[in-house]
Figure 1 (tube, rainbow, N blue to C red):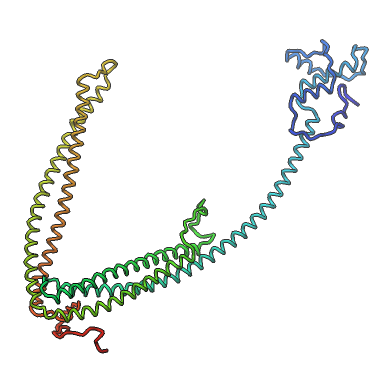
Figure 2 (tube, helix red, strand yellow; figure 1 turned 180 degrees about the horizontal axis):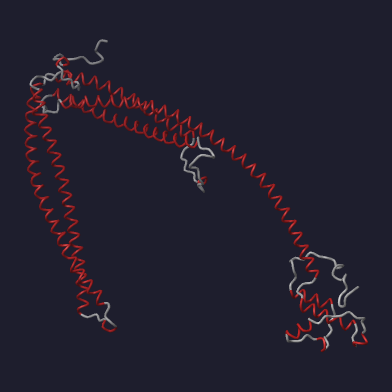
Length: 482
C-alpha cells in the first residue's frame, strides 16, 4: 500500500553516493525538492491558516479512512500530491538521501580513524622499543667513555702530583739556597767600596742572586701550571666520575634543553694529553736548571767566603755608620708622623663641620620645597608666577647647589683624610722597619761581630753553635775529597 504523496520505495531504491560534507547546503536541498515534485499552487481551501491556534485545531482532528472518491470531494490524486510535497518542503530540512549519505560518511570516517589509530599504535610501540634500545646503547657507550676518561684523568693526575711534588721540593731547595745567598750577600752590605775583594764578591753574588730569582720565578710558573692543571684534572675527575655513576634512577637528573647545541670544548684528546705532557716536560727542564744553579751557587758561596774572611774590621766600621744613618732616619720619620697625626685630627674636625653644615641646610630646603608644594594648590588664576614663586625656586636651586658643593667638599676632605691615613700607615710601617733594622744592626749584628763571622755564616747558614764556626778557609765542592 502506498500513501498519498510519495511511494514507499522512492527513497530506499535511490543510489547512495558519498558527499563531500555530512549534509548538503540548504540551497542544494531546496533545488532537489523543486526537481522532485512539480509545482502546483495550493487551492485556497488547503492553504495553512496563519493563526497557530487554528493550525493546532486542524491538527487535532482525527482523520478517518474512507474509500477515495474524487468525484465526491471534487479532487483528484494528482491535485492532492502537491499539498503533501509542499508541506514536506515547509517542515523538513534534509531528505532521506542526505540522512543515509551522512550515516555512510560517518561509518567510513570512523573506520578510517580506527585504521589510522591502529597503525599509529603499532608504529608508536615499535618506535618506543627502538628508541629504548638506542637510548640504552648510547647510555652504555657514554658510561664506558666516561669511565675511560676518568682513568685517563687519574693517570695524568698521578703524573702531575709526582711532578708537582718534585717541583715543590726543588723550589724549596732553591729558595733555601737563595736565602743563603741573600744572607751571605747581606754580610757584605756594609759600605766597603774601597775593598776590591768585597766588591767583586758582591757583584758575583748579585748576578747569581738575580739568576736564582729568575729561576725561582720560572719554577713557580711551572709549579703554578702544574697546580692549575692538577686542579683542573681533579675538578674534571669529579665531574666525569659523577657523570660515570649517573643512572636513569639517579637523583639530580633533569632536562637541560639546548645543551647539546652548546659546544664549549677547547681541546681534543691529543691536545689535552699533550698539554699536560708539556707541563711536565717544562717542569722537569726547570728542575734540572734549578739543580744546576744550586750547585753553582754552592760553589760561589764557598769561594766568596774564602775571599771575604779577612775583611772583619771593615765590616764593623760599616755597621757603625749604618746604625747612625738608621737612627737619623728613624728620628725624621717620627717627626713626620707626629705632623701627620696632627693634620689628621684637623681634617677630621673639618669633615665634622662640613657634615654639620649639610645637616643645617636640610630644614631650609624642606621649608622651601614645602612652600612650593603648598603654592601649587592655589586655585585658578591664583597660580601666578610672582616674585615669591621665583624667589622660592631660586632658593631651592641655591640650597641644592650649596648642599652639592658641601658634599663635594666633604668628599674631597674624606679623600684627603684617606690619603693622610695611608701616609700615616706608611710612616708607622717604615718606623717599625727602621726600629727593627736599628735593633738588628746595633744589638744583634754588632754583638755578634765582636769577633770575625764564622765560616758557616759566610756561606749562608744560620748556625750559631761555635762548633760550626772556623777561621780556616774552606775548599770549593769541586776540590773537596769524598
